[in-house]
Picture 1 (cartoon, rainbow, N blue to C red):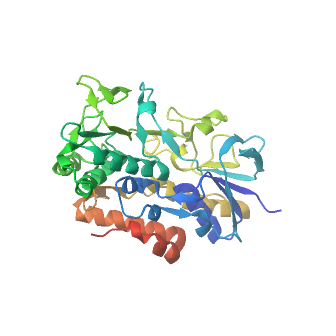
Picture 2 (cartoon, one colour; picture 1 turned 60 degrees about the vertical axis):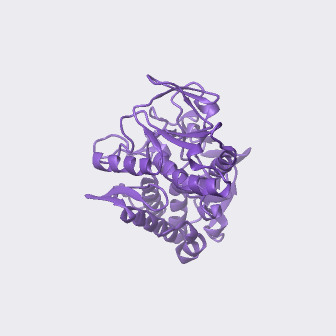
Picture 3 (cartoon, rainbow, N blue to C red; picture 1 turned 120 degrees about the vertical axis):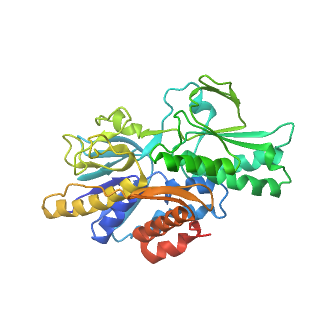
Length: 391
């Protein structure tokens, strides 16, 4: 009897699992709340005014062969892992093998007013929302009423978004006859440095590049409270804002903890080397909602790089499972970190190589091409290559 394989979530991990099963002609059902796969790590480019937003998402029916995979569009409301059932928009879906790849959600750290008054860069729709807000704000900027855009969080998402906005603001200003100095862009970070995952030398370089683009970079600036039009920070005067974008952290999808999965303090499910939660052998948890231990025993940071490798590995292991052969332990091969700093520059570390400027940016664009090819070959690459900019 054919095994019912259910994949929850069409993010990086879920899509890579689905594509890997498809290559093995293993039937599955993919459940997602939107009819497309969005390139989540590139949403700063959509928010920052890139020409063709639709280059940053792809319809699931363009990725999934209906002869192998079924697509179910709906919102997962409950997971009964004891009864092997999932609730999707009121319907009950049964499974033999469940892949949970539901990703993460914004972490607000209990800061008063943060969720209410900030906008978050979380997906395609939120990126378009930020894009629209920026246009409307810049149109109205004057010397008497300048626009203050604050990005909260100096990690990868915050830095990349700030770089994109910094390059876009001069173009928007010219388009609407506004002086660019009437639009202020501020990046705030609670730690004493931005991009804490990189070396000090690269952190300084990133800060320098952003400041050269006109960004005010304020480290050691911890958000204590957010009010309408005002960010209250510890030990500093309040910051007024026209738009406050929060990118300061993520936690695992709350659905897992709410449905009895064991979770850590960041809401992620600790998993073993083959992605099983403790004591649940017919469920695999991957991507941002999984806490997979690194060499030091601490969970690896949630990244698209890790999620895609997990998805590839899991697809192979499901093939082994169906054949009755042992599952292989996952050993991630994390190649490094790359960050864009606007439309022409980047920074990062790959292996022992420290990269900056056009070289880092080129590698970032090459990674886009590699991912497109990995999920759909030439067909997908040719359709979505507009997101790749080599100049």
